[in-house]
Length: 153
Image 1: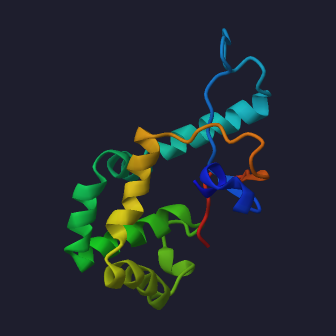
Image 2 (image 1 turned 180 degrees about the horizontal axis):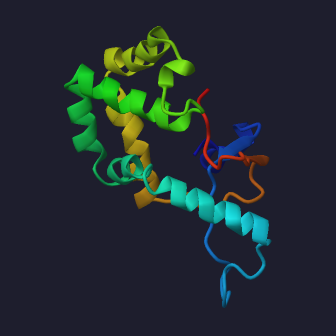
C-alpha cells in the first residue's frame, strides 16, 4: 500500500502470487497464453483448491477469526503451523524444514503482541478496497515461483 500512497518514499515494490483476469474485450482469455504456461496455471489452480479457505475467511470474517485465535494459544498455533506446512516444501512434514522452536517463535510473536487480528484484517481491506492502478509510481518486480506460491522456507 505504501507504493500506492507514498510512492516517492518507496524504493521498489516486490510482488508474488499475482493473478489477473482476461484483457478487456477478450473473446477467449486464454488465446494468447502459451500452452505450457496455461498448463501451469491450470495445475496451480487445481492445487490451490484445498488451500484457499484461509483466504476466504480472512477476507470476509477477519475479526471473528482473529478474536478466536487471540483467545486460544492452541488454536493460534494450529492456524499458523498449518500455513507453514502448506506453504513450505516439506511433503507434509513441517519439522523437516523448521524446528519446534522456530515454529513456536513465530506463533509467540502473534500471541504476545496480540496481532493476529490485524494480520488477518488486511485480506478484508484489500477485498473491499482493492488497490488502485499504481502503474509508473514505483519500480515493481514480480517473483514468479515454479510452484506458483510463495514459500516460507
